[in-house]
Structure formats: structure tokens, C-alpha cells
Length: 99
Image (cartoon, rainbow, N blue to C red; front, top):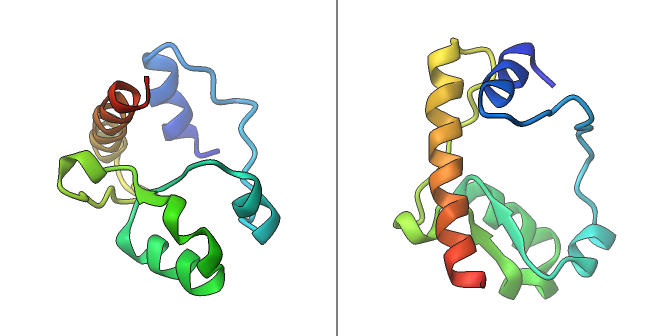
């Protein structure tokens, strides 16, 4: 994981050191109850490649008007902090609805 991302997570009390990125595959999609993505193009890509999972693929920012959440890769720390706030807000909205 990017050092800036790790630092922003650490500032919020989260240890991201064990995170390992994985390529999404059809088995992962089939076994998931809910698939949350950051951008509308992610929804389209997943639904196109695995239409049988379309009913469980949603934007993380669904409850904020299907808000896209940008990838801060190769940007300054302020971009990572902004994206952290967007993700935190979106997750809080999902938690409220899933409880």
C-alpha cells in the first residue's frame, strides 16, 4: 500500500500494513453478499463481466447520490485525506442501513 495512504490510515487509528491488493474474480463476486465499488465505471465493468451479480453491486457512495470516490494515487496527502473522509462518510451511511 502507498506510504501516504498508510500514514493517513494510521492518523485515524487504522493499521493498513497487512492489506494486500487482489485482482477481483468471478468466485469472489459469487461468494460476496454485497459488492461496493468506488466509481460508476467499476459497476459497469463488473456487471458486464458477471451479469449474474448485478443485483448486489452498488456504489460505496450510493447514499450520497451515487457519488464517485476518486483514486488519490500519485497525489498529495491532502487528496488522500479528502478521499478518506469521503469513504468514511459513505461507510457510515451503509452501516446505518445494514444494521
